[in-house]
Image 1 (cartoon, protein in one colour):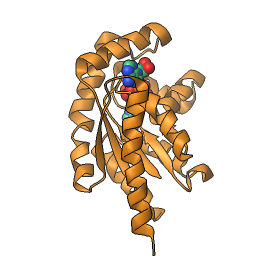
Image 2 (tube, protein in one colour):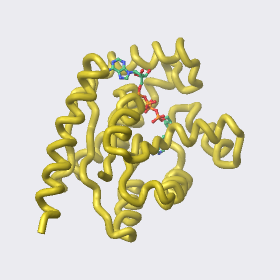
Image 3 (cartoon, helix red, strand yellow):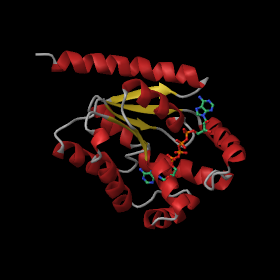
Image 4 (tube, protein in one colour):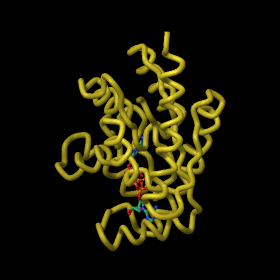
Amino acid sequence: MRLLLMGPPGAGKGTQAAVIAERFAVPAISTGDIFRANVAQQTALGVAAQTYMDAGEYVPDEITNAMVADRLAGGDCADGFLLDGYPRTPQQVAELDEMLALADVALDAVMLLEADPDELVSRLLARAQEQGRADDTESVIRRRLEVYAAETGPLAAGYAERGLLARVDGLGPVDEVTERILTVLTSAAAQRTATSAP
Ligand code: B4P
């Protein structure tokens, strides 16, 4: 399975990605996690990304696209992957399309986790208390939500036109959200098997 998990900050992408990836035996690739690991180690990539992340802005496309291309070239992605938080801009969508076309593979499904802004802010503020992430202050959270609405929200329409988009309600207990996603993916997997059958 080749899957995308989209949704605003705090919708539960990272939370759900781990479970789904395990269920489908594919690597979960979170651009946010890769950036944070690089920031923690102060690599050149981390230094380049940190200012943007701390301000709630997106890291520039050239940096993000090169990082994802490199990660998807890993042998563990040959049979599938779950991309969490990528693509987030039209240029990232175009670049991912090109990467997939070059590898002669296609996406199976794009899941869009949805939740209302008040819930998102309260989840992220709760996480700020638990984990102290630099970008989980209220003003930066509000900025991340604005950037998402302006740049990433509109991308869903393109995937809907391709027949790939599944909207999933991200409200409620984590297990229930997982069940909703698995229901969608099980039917996508069945469809994939049916269309690839001789
Ligand atoms: P991310 O790491 O992707 O951060 P995020 O959008 O906040 O999502 P995250 O996965 O952490 O949170 P989740 O919703 O799971 O990105 C961080 C930054 O990296 C970006 O702002 C940007 O600067 C940069 N970046 C990343 N990708 C990029 C790209 N493609 N292009 C450019 N820049 C990029 O969970 C949030 C909280 O909610 C958690 O505490 C969780 O425990 C809780 N939660 C989850 N599900 C819940 C539920 N059902 N009920 C209650 N709480 C729940």
